Length: 382
Image (cartoon, rainbow, N blue to C red; front, side, top):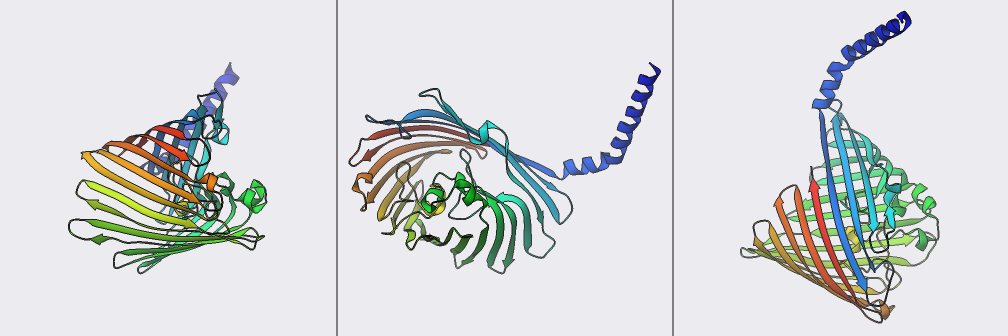
């Protein structure tokens, strides 16, 4: 009994000493830490006449991400973001979980801002390029582990980075198969990044170069503008992206042009894009900016293809918008992949940190069977 009493006393002294030594540091850390994240639910229902597979079935998608940004000193901060994402196939009872359904690390990095107009990020970080997806509230995103520096020189911002590991194979259009390599080879290849962006006279310009060592090189050039015609505001845009595999002699390319417009409560968007005759794989994920996809229509990865995208929307009332979309896809290299789609979407945004939309439409596949698609999406950020 005396021995237990002595051990309890030692433990109490140790806890008291730990508390006294770190109470101030812990309190400061809490004060200097911001917590953020999001939670998303999505229900998809897809059918294709007399067909099964990826375009047929119903499933629930869930994703929650939680992150913290902690200011350690005036010049050093730490960022961590972790997520859980899962997909339940309700049509046949099967389920698919990203990262085995466990909590996985998205970001884990330190940022140093001690140099004027410059930030240096070390660790696991997002790959924010037109060819990748850096933010997606329901699906996977592309990250890399390494070092990157961001510096601003007048109107120009320059980014340079080196990643010794990535998850490029995790995109829904992974180039691993097209390159003839395994996913591990793609992810373990050194990746070099160089970006520059600037804004002059209302026109935003950007250029990105990626080099996956011994596998591929890709570059993307884009421009976005803003024109105020009093009654109508136009936002024209254009982008060209090229990807060349080291083991191939052909280039993959995809370009598009278009403009958004806004006139009072009415808005819209019209754009046209094409891929090269040799190939059109320019992005590792169809949700990437360079891919220019519709909903059931996408030309990323298709040679000699084109797509016309149109949108017309109206603000029904405060926080409520209805949009009608029509997209037409042509594939000269394989006419059986021609497709057109039409779908409507009702979006409800009662507050800045929550939104939901209901979407329904039909895809007509030439040389195949037609399909219907429906979706319910709810997203909350904090």
